[in-house]
Image (cartoon, rainbow, N blue to C red):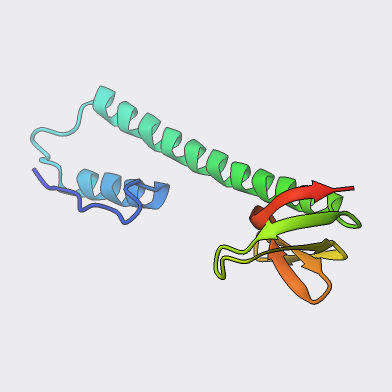
Length: 123
Protein backbone atom coordinates (compact mmCIF):
# COMPACT_ATOMS: atom_id res chain seq x y z
CA UNK A 1 0.00 0.00 0.00
CA UNK A 2 1.39 3.41 -0.96
CA UNK A 3 1.46 6.41 1.32
CA UNK A 4 0.59 10.02 0.59
CA UNK A 5 2.95 12.74 1.76
CA UNK A 6 1.52 15.56 3.83
CA UNK A 7 0.43 18.62 1.89
CA UNK A 8 1.66 21.96 3.25
CA UNK A 9 -1.76 23.14 4.37
CA UNK A 10 -2.84 19.67 5.57
CA UNK A 11 -5.70 19.46 3.06
CA UNK A 12 -5.96 17.68 -0.24
CA UNK A 13 -7.19 19.82 -3.10
CA UNK A 14 -9.08 18.53 -6.09
CA UNK A 15 -5.95 18.39 -8.27
CA UNK A 16 -4.06 16.26 -5.76
CA UNK A 17 -7.09 14.01 -5.27
CA UNK A 18 -7.52 13.52 -9.02
CA UNK A 19 -3.81 12.70 -9.49
CA UNK A 20 -4.00 10.15 -6.66
CA UNK A 21 -7.19 8.68 -8.10
CA UNK A 22 -5.71 8.33 -11.62
CA UNK A 23 -2.51 6.79 -10.22
CA UNK A 24 -4.57 4.29 -8.26
CA UNK A 25 -6.54 3.35 -11.39
CA UNK A 26 -3.31 2.87 -13.39
CA UNK A 27 -1.59 0.72 -10.78
CA UNK A 28 -4.47 -1.47 -9.69
CA UNK A 29 -4.20 -5.22 -10.05
CA UNK A 30 -6.05 -6.22 -13.27
CA UNK A 31 -6.91 -9.57 -11.66
CA UNK A 32 -8.54 -7.80 -8.71
CA UNK A 33 -9.80 -4.42 -9.98
CA UNK A 34 -11.51 -1.86 -7.82
CA UNK A 35 -15.15 -2.78 -7.34
CA UNK A 36 -17.97 -0.63 -8.66
CA UNK A 37 -18.97 0.44 -5.17
CA UNK A 38 -15.43 1.56 -4.32
CA UNK A 39 -15.09 3.33 -7.66
CA UNK A 40 -18.36 5.22 -7.18
CA UNK A 41 -17.42 6.12 -3.61
CA UNK A 42 -14.13 7.60 -4.81
CA UNK A 43 -15.89 9.58 -7.53
CA UNK A 44 -18.32 10.90 -4.91
CA UNK A 45 -15.38 11.89 -2.72
CA UNK A 46 -13.80 13.74 -5.66
CA UNK A 47 -17.06 15.55 -6.28
CA UNK A 48 -17.25 16.52 -2.60
CA UNK A 49 -13.66 17.81 -2.62
CA UNK A 50 -14.37 19.87 -5.73
CA UNK A 51 -17.57 21.35 -4.27
CA UNK A 52 -15.83 22.24 -0.99
CA UNK A 53 -13.05 23.91 -2.96
CA UNK A 54 -15.60 25.94 -4.94
CA UNK A 55 -17.48 26.84 -1.76
CA UNK A 56 -14.27 27.99 -0.06
CA UNK A 57 -13.42 30.15 -3.08
CA UNK A 58 -16.88 31.73 -3.00
CA UNK A 59 -16.59 32.43 0.75
CA UNK A 60 -13.24 34.15 0.18
CA UNK A 61 -14.82 36.37 -2.51
CA UNK A 62 -17.75 37.17 -0.23
CA UNK A 63 -15.42 38.08 2.63
CA UNK A 64 -13.37 40.37 0.37
CA UNK A 65 -16.55 42.11 -0.85
CA UNK A 66 -17.83 42.50 2.71
CA UNK A 67 -14.55 43.99 3.90
CA UNK A 68 -14.55 46.39 0.94
CA UNK A 69 -18.08 47.51 1.84
CA UNK A 70 -17.08 47.99 5.50
CA UNK A 71 -14.10 50.08 4.44
CA UNK A 72 -16.11 52.33 2.12
CA UNK A 73 -18.67 52.90 4.90
CA UNK A 74 -15.86 54.48 6.94
CA UNK A 75 -15.05 57.20 4.39
CA UNK A 76 -15.65 60.57 6.04
CA UNK A 77 -15.62 59.13 9.55
CA UNK A 78 -12.90 59.47 12.17
CA UNK A 79 -11.25 56.26 13.34
CA UNK A 80 -8.77 55.29 16.02
CA UNK A 81 -6.30 52.55 15.22
CA UNK A 82 -3.42 50.63 16.71
CA UNK A 83 -0.51 49.74 14.43
CA UNK A 84 0.68 46.27 15.48
CA UNK A 85 4.02 46.73 13.69
CA UNK A 86 5.09 49.88 15.55
CA UNK A 87 2.87 49.49 18.61
CA UNK A 88 1.65 53.05 18.18
CA UNK A 89 -1.94 54.21 18.41
CA UNK A 90 -3.36 57.14 16.46
CA UNK A 91 -6.44 58.28 14.66
CA UNK A 92 -7.72 60.41 11.84
CA UNK A 93 -10.43 61.05 9.29
CA UNK A 94 -10.80 58.41 6.56
CA UNK A 95 -10.40 60.18 3.22
CA UNK A 96 -10.54 57.13 0.95
CA UNK A 97 -10.07 53.42 0.48
CA UNK A 98 -7.47 51.56 -1.52
CA UNK A 99 -7.62 47.86 -2.35
CA UNK A 100 -4.31 45.99 -2.01
CA UNK A 101 -4.89 42.52 -3.40
CA UNK A 102 -8.09 41.48 -1.65
CA UNK A 103 -7.51 43.62 1.43
CA UNK A 104 -8.98 47.10 1.77
CA UNK A 105 -6.70 49.77 3.21
CA UNK A 106 -8.06 52.98 4.72
CA UNK A 107 -6.43 56.24 3.66
CA UNK A 108 -6.02 58.78 6.46
CA UNK A 109 -4.31 61.66 4.74
CA UNK A 110 -1.01 60.18 3.56
CA UNK A 111 -1.20 57.27 6.04
CA UNK A 112 -2.42 53.80 5.02
CA UNK A 113 -4.21 51.87 7.76
CA UNK A 114 -5.31 48.24 7.52
CA UNK A 115 -9.00 47.75 8.25
CA UNK A 116 -8.26 45.25 11.01
CA UNK A 117 -6.14 47.84 12.88
CA UNK A 118 -9.23 50.00 13.59
CA UNK A 119 -10.12 50.04 17.30
CA UNK A 120 -12.86 52.70 17.33
CA UNK A 121 -15.11 54.56 14.91
CA UNK A 122 -16.45 58.07 15.52
CA UNK A 123 -19.13 59.89 13.51
